Image (cartoon, rainbow, N blue to C red; front, top):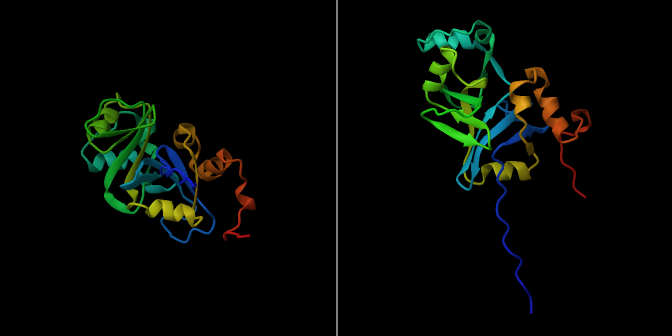
Length: 193
């Protein structure tokens, strides 16, 4: 009598980093670290956390008719979050807060796309840790899993300190470090025995 092995549930990479492998050919993602805010059978949504734009928060706030009261925050960069809806802002933040349009990620991170979080930041009562992006990275059903299977990405549980405290130039190496990998030893091609 033979038994059928139980079906394995798909892996949920919500609250993980996607770390681009050296062979990544897509110019949007070469050398990228992506924070995955949502991942399900319906697809995935993430934000590139290591691609600062030439736009800073002070300039962004002026564009949306808000005055940023916290001067040091004004020089913080806005990030290229991904190639989808690049005219739309997303705020990855900690603590969660109670904003109009927030997706809770893990126990303590929020991803908000409503203007009220920026209004709170402008007046000095917003979240203490934040990363603002224009655009996001999106994958349809099964697309991300296929890219991972083809060795385009490595995955590791996200560390908020990499997002909010690590200098942008060090985020890729820190993400590899979470995996215990020195990126200098990685090959751009996959090997098969």
